[in-house]
Length: 97
Image (cartoon, rainbow, N blue to C red):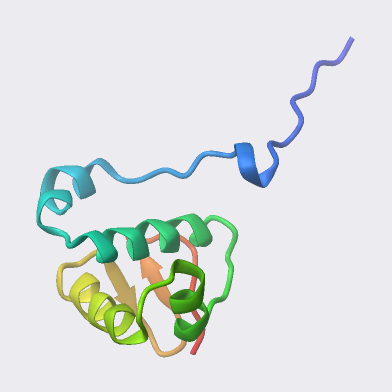
């Protein structure tokens, strides 16, 4: 008898956050920036594209705060922005401009 494990649905899957995030960034990250970062890591698992306006609406955070957070996250090495992509600690692409 062959045993197989079904893939978990989106709601029951797991999102992994690197330990370095907790050790070096969590205590100094503003609450909205944390919310943005965690959602971006979640989306990165699925290779999802999202526009900053959509991110703003989904998280109920002003667009200016989203833009400020993106700059902060990049300056602190939490994300890496490329021409049309953003990476979270080397995770999958999550944003297209």
